[in-house]
Length: 336
Image (tube, rainbow, N blue to C red):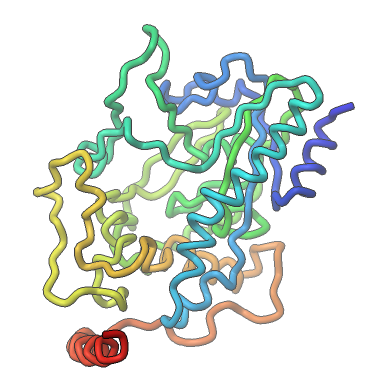
């Protein structure tokens, strides 16, 4: 016999670190294009799984010497490989007991989104056509943070990154809709974020406003967070700031917001980047936030030693560009 408890227990056995349950009525008032009920109108419950990002994935970025693990394993690896594998197993477990299970991986099927409008105005609109009047157009793009909040897993931080009492900002989410009805978990009523705004101060793109905020309402709860400059965030994420990008190509300029016209230009936003995305390693919204939460004892998951051990690095570009040229010449001699 399947129960809420057995589902949670199985989800953790197959790899989820946190599991929360939301009833579907908690999404009342959600924008049509982000409403999970549009995906499965007969769903009774939403299951949200969290996968922690091990702290060690950030170590090489923190030291400025090794950037692969966070990008490959902490970002794409969880979103595109590990999360979907666990999600499939849980879907099969529920369907083996006679209930339908619809997976919602944290993979952005964004071809229907107008990237031009999103990055120029901060507003999302779709370019696809609804199959019927009054229904969302494909693909519905749910906000995993909203689902995690509705499932009682934590709260929105000032940076808009979702925080859990266990791991702070260091996790990613997937979700599952099912017609098996369960008692929802209570909404999180604690307080993790103390509005220190260190996330905004440390953001390499200055994308997090120090003064302006926005909010959404979920299940009668007001979730407030900083206003985010999505263009600045996206550029910093791709390595725009030379002082925080060891892979920066000297002399290469940003594409420029005013030149951003093609639907697919977002693939070439950073001609100055010779590395995978997330090169700045979420310096403000995740690393600085985590360090503060750890130092102030706000997280239940503890370590023997603190994460930050040295003064954060910043590159002196007046010296670095010359050093890069010399290193490249040495590598050419070795490789060619």
